[in-house]
Length: 204
Image (cartoon, rainbow, N blue to C red):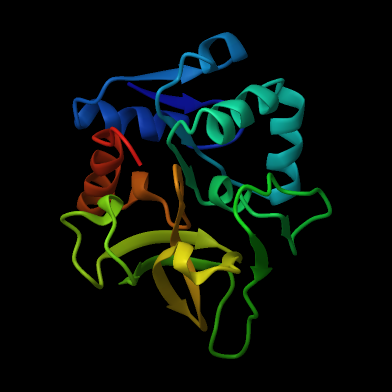
C-alpha cells in the first residue's frame, strides 16, 4: 500500500491513475490519522517552493510526516518540488525546507541557448546502482518541468544526474528518502517502471 500525500499541491489523480494501471494498492492521505498508518509515502509537489512548504506547514501533517520518515524510516518518494522540499533551502523562496538531505535548490540560469523552465523529455545518467532504477537503462528519458534544480552536497547521495546547461541531481537517495526531479507520472513506460520499483520496496 502506498500513501499519496495530499497537502494541497501535486498531481494526485495522475499518480492514482498510474498505480491503478500498475495494480498497486494506494490510498490518498488527507489527515494525520491516515498518515500515521503509512508504510510507504508518495510525496508530490508542483508550483513554487515557498507555496508548497507553506501548505505543508499549514496542513497539520508535517510533525507526523517527519516522525514517520526520520524516526520510523518509512520509505518516501518525493517528486519535483516534493523532492526539492527535502533540501535545506531554495533560491526560489525564503521558507526553510525540511532539511532531510544536506542540499540546496538552485536556479537554472537561462541564456541565449538555454530556455527556462526546463520543460520536456531529457535523459538521465545513472551514477550508482539502486533499486529505484532497476530495469532502467542508462540514458533513460523522463519528462521534466522545472526552473530550479536539486544540488546534493554529498554526491554519494546522487543516484542519477541530468544535463540541462549544467549537470544536476535528478534522482537522490539518503537511506529511506528518495527524490526525483522529473515527473514519473508523465513519463510513460520509464515512469511506470520507476514507480513500480518503489511499490515493490520492502526495506531500504
